[in-house]
Structure formats: structure tokens, C-alpha cells
Length: 507
Image 1 (tube, helix red, strand yellow):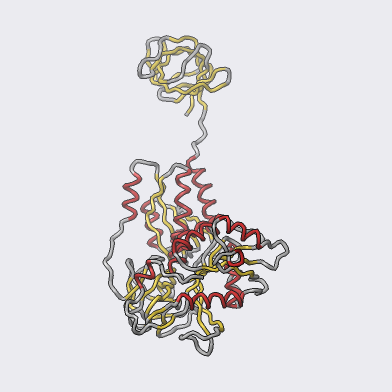
Image 2: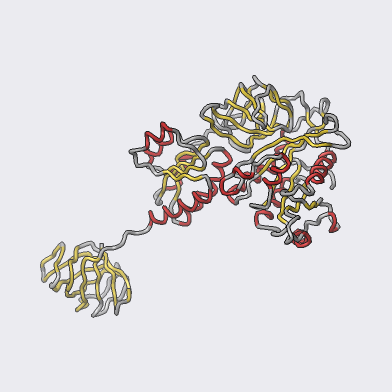
């Protein structure tokens, strides 16, 4: 476990340059891994709560930050009576949340990679390893479900070795522990390893400096207003301060800790719920007391210009939190490429579906894609008699499937209606350079009309298509013709016509 001297850029930019008031600070630890490998269950065991059971679809759909206190021996400088704080960040495992997992590594000092002992490495496990390497943070591998009879830790270590990741008992430097989030086996050892690794990292911060940190999530509560969860990386955050991100600002009138208890101040490494923003800050933004230069975004107009003359589909993206809006966008937009439509995002935001969203949908003929975003009674009453398409779900991949089915039905061509049939009796001219040709035949069923499309059949096989440019009976030009008539047709086609071919006229 060599000391890491290459902290990621986000933390470098926020670190205080004044070493005179710096003290040891608690580590921020991100828990990462594949879906269902036990990340949330691990935190659940540590905190003795049931966080895991409350998530739709069995997947943690938010980044959640928690602070715990563990025994530390020897006690660190900031410990109280031999105890030390650790802040944990839980990241979602579903593929849609790639950006959130990446953000988790940016804010963390240490990563814990959870791998199910009986399943081994999965694609998302490898993705997470790449994030950890890019962030240049030290990490611990926790082999979960080690209590199961089918657990095979050596197989997992072999898979890691194939990626040139060597754990300590295989001659490498990466700590690797067997744990069970179900029974608690090995979890005390994991916490001790985190404390040891944090002390080796020599994490420092200055409680007297201006507060700086990173936004993890933001959302809108009908009672509280706009709030954001952030991790304080330096300094002390307190009531009355004004802090800024690139896109939002707040004069702090209400501040809560991770347990949603009101507090007057919070210091470095603590999760902070900051209430009263002028608009939701974007997840992943840094915050500080320094006012930044603003950037104006006109995303909908840019999307519209990029769409040009392509077939477009307008949509409004809503979710309960800013990180979820990112994930929703990452899942929904690729669907349109599959069905050859261009998405035009009229708006995207966190919070309940508002009347403003509904009126935007009405004015732009947009569908609302809602992930865990509530509909108020006022909005529900307003849309009752209005034709506004809203896709809602608590599970992101269910939204993905439902929208895809809808779009596939939407672009499916209407069934063509057969209006008449004609047998080719004569070929009056060969095709010219513009694929125009004159043929004659007997209309033995239905009708033919100028401008109609033609399916050309030969022994029941489709051999080509054509379009009627004009119809003549004798020398008289006609707009249409009934059955039991012999008529001449000028058509446009790239197919080779033969006597006996059957023309099927369709609309």
C-alpha cells in the first residue's frame, strides 16, 4: 500500500495551500461494484439499517453519503476517545449510472471494490477498476458472499491477475479481504484496513478555511425547496454563508447532516444537505464561496438546430435528483438512434413534474419521461383531459423498455391498403434516363389512381415497385380508372417489367 502522491484534479483544485492550520481529516470512501454484488448490503450492515430493501428493482438508484464512527487504535489526531469517522459513498450498479460511479471516484480518497466471490468479475467490475485507476486513488478489494459454499476466492484472484491486478497474498500490493455483508464476517477487518490506509495517505484539511466541496446530488422538495447533498473537502460550512457552483448559488439558511438533523455547521469530509438553492446545482460540480463566471446554456435550441430536417421526437426529462437526470439521459437518448429518430430535449430537470413542464410539453408536443418524479395533485387535475404523453417508472430500465416499444410502434409504417390489380399485356416503351416507361394492361380488380404506388409481382414474388405518373384510356387522360378496363400507364420504376406481371395498386 504505497502512499498515493497523485490525488485527482478535483481534490487538488480544492485543497488548501496553507498548511498552517491543517489537521488530519476523515477519509471519504466510495463503495463500488457490479449490480447485486452486495455494495448496499455492506453499508447496510455497517450502519445497522435496511437501506438495501427500500430501493426499487433491487438496485440503489442514488449516490448516498453516510458518516460512521469506528474504533481506531491508535487514535488519530481528530479522533475522540479512540474513535474515528469515515464517510461512505454508495454508488449505483446499474449500467445507466456510469457517470455517477465516475463521480464517486472523483470525490473519494479510498475505494472499496465489492466483488461477489461466487460470481467473479463482471463488465461493470472492470469499468469500475478503470475509474479507480484513472482517479489514482488507493483501493481495497472486498470479496463478498464468502460464506456461501460456492464461493471461489482463488478464481476471482486469478481473474484479477489476468488484468495485472495482484492482491497481497498473490505477491501484490492490493489489500484483499473476505467478507460477508449478510453475517458481518470480515467487516471489522475491512474497517480497520480503511483506517490504516487513511493514516498512510496522511489526509489533511484546514477547519478555519473557506468551505469547498463537491455536489453529489440535487433535488426539489415541495416543502423544503431545492436542496443538494455535497461532500465537504476542506474548511467549515455554516449557516449564513453564500456558496456557488458553476450553475447555481445559495445563501445557506438551512443545513442538515446525513441523518437529516438540522445543524449550524459541518466540517471537512462530512456529507452536507444544503437547502435553499436558486436552482438545482449539477451533480459533480464543485462548490465554494468564490463566485464563478456563469455560462449560458440554450440546450433545447442547439438540439433543434442539430436536428435539422431529420425526423425528430421532442421530450422532457424529469427525475427526482440531478444525478438521476444524467442517468436517465444516458439510457433514453441512445434508443432514438436505434429507431432512426432524432431526440430533441426541450428541457431536463430534477424535482416533481410541474405545470411549467406540462405547458412546455403542450407547446412543443413533447413526451415527458419521468424517473421517480412525482406528479402533484394540481398537475394531475390539469392533465386529466389533456392528451399529454407521460412515461413514468420507479425503475430506469423499465422506462427504457416502455419508451422503445412506443417508438417502434410510432415509426411502424401503416399497413398498405390494396385498391386494385392490373395484368401487364403490352410494353409500349423502354425505360428512359429518368426511369419513365409506358405499359398497357387490363385492370381486372378494383381501381387505379394517378400518383398511386405499385407493387410489381411476378409469379407471386415482389420484383420491384413503381409509381403511376399518368393513366390513359385510348387517347383520353384520366385521373382514375375502374376495373374491367384496358388502360395505358406511364410509370416511374427502376424494375424491369415483363408481360404477365401483376401490378398491385396500394395506398
